[in-house]
Image (cartoon, rainbow, N blue to C red; front, top):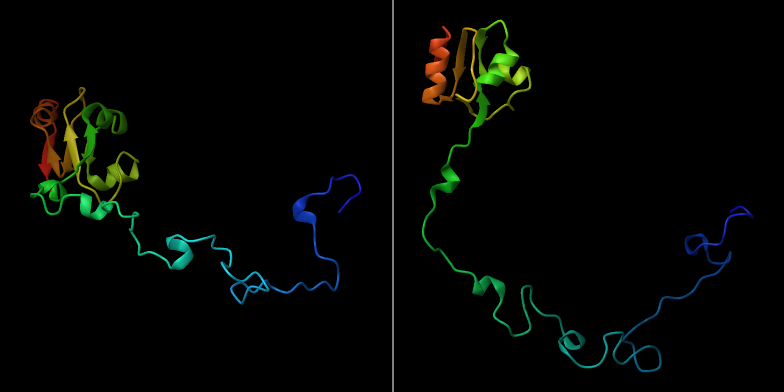
Length: 151
């Protein structure tokens, strides 16, 4: 510690050779006995309560409904979307466009299905291979002289 720095709590250390005994709570009234730091009366002074106990109020897990209907949301397919104008930017010369080339160019993430949508225009002939296409995307790709193949 330098002389210029102010004294801080975290700089304090016990004196060399100091050894203070641990407080033995709950070992009789002569030495921090009796309530042993738990206060007076009440649930926590006597014993602990089970997880989820809310002091006599109906607990959250009993207030919520149990098994209400069925949802197909868990089984829905979520596609990564690529628009035609983006394909035109990434492949200005046209050519073959696959999911792997889109991953390499950073347009989509791997291990997720890809859907091509028809937003924007495309002027070059591209042969696109993807998991799904919108009908307008298929029409515009075919009109530009390319092809759309579903995986």
